[in-house]
Length: 251
Image (cartoon, rainbow, N blue to C red):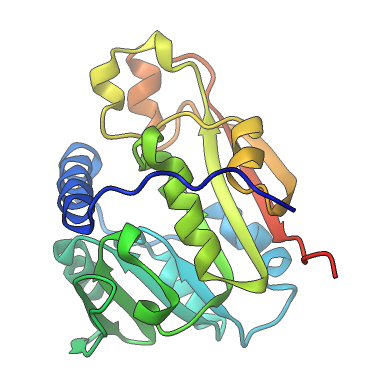
């Protein structure tokens, strides 16, 4: 099958600078400095659907921040790799979880990167758009995207999905959490750093090589970062959890 045309790429240096600046502004806007000490509920509910019950698989967590999900997945026996552009958040993660943090070596042919080992978790400090199998040490069996896609600039969503697709194994599965809401009902400044609205149709277009199953929908208007948007005038905010399964190529 022939997919949609590949998105245009900006120069690598421009990508890195823009991504780091955007993510830093997003962190300043949304980080409440509260310790991350609980697993994302949808991950806890559907981790067996994601991994098919296996506990020896590799799992990728894009834009992982200081998420406790890394610890949860590692405690299950999975090989956990996160990608995060902020060294500050990587250090916060290790400190909050009482994990020793040590630096490792990483190839830099595809862009500047540093590998950090925090207990059983490996976190690559790099621009997401520089991530590649060479840089991260291979392709992954599964991935968990907990609103990472939602904070990416909408103009770069297709490139984000392209990078993620390139990091997945031929039988890869992705658990994706994304919310849909009326962006026009709030001041655009509130959404400049995300999260942004993503509908069902766009998920199918971005991940055209995957089957798409909606595992659940819930109103999150009063939860987490979405509460700020709701208080600013956004109505119902519908968060969906998707299971994406890579479609094998036709022989």
